[in-house]
Image 1 (cartoon, one colour):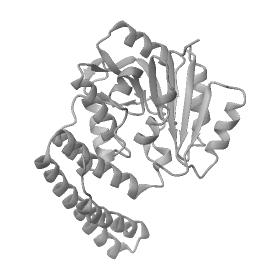
Image 2 (tube, one colour; image 1 turned 30 degrees about the horizontal axis):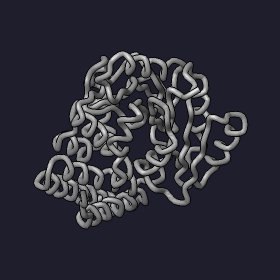
Image 3 (cartoon, one colour; image 1 turned 180 degrees about the horizontal axis):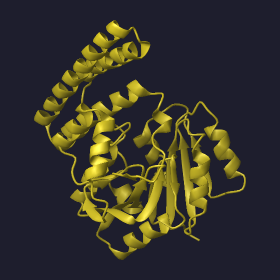
Image 4 (cartoon, helix red, strand yellow; image 1 turned 135 degrees about the vertical axis):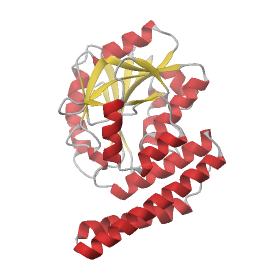
Length: 307
């Protein structure tokens, strides 16, 4: 029987969480074909997935010989997917038993929907803001210039968690029409990682006349970014350059130049701050951050946007 939903999960050093994620998918009421694309993990991720494949022929593993990024890897199974819907999923998520069913039922009820995402909870049960009504220059600068943890707390506290139309939902978990995903060419592979990749999806499906919906009746738990924890510099570099690419692609050259200047100044301010703290306290952590922000400022300046 043809699957209604195919799940695509990209892993990178995800051995601690991928088992729980697979288990939660298998417990769902809707049978799914599961495609796991591993971006050259250095831990036991592949071995963990292989152990599940022995008893679950619905699981397909694609192994990459290097880390091609989240966007590119999410596109890799596309040719082999024939289901009506694709569920893009991060490995550090746990789905409730009716999570997929509720997303599918809502999509089936409204042909204008192109993308739908669930209510996300942190491990402790706190609600996690996972939908954006826009992704303007102002929004981007707020997230990238001010401390991330501060902005996360602000957005989590002021956001509405009622079902509503948005520009896009979190790339950690969303359901999309397979045909629509294929028509827009999937992810833009130049967006290596972070929020700009799914923001780009949201903009492109809206241009085709489809809506994105945050749907609070479906609930998941997100443990949050463990695979990227050791990659502090690269994660921030991909975030900043991804936003520059997104702005240039959808907002134009002038706004991209403004963002680049602000990103560089912000990185230099952090560099100077941690340089002073490092000189006063001699703490290695401050010196590491000093190097991180120095390199960010230099490489964001050198980054060439080629939309």
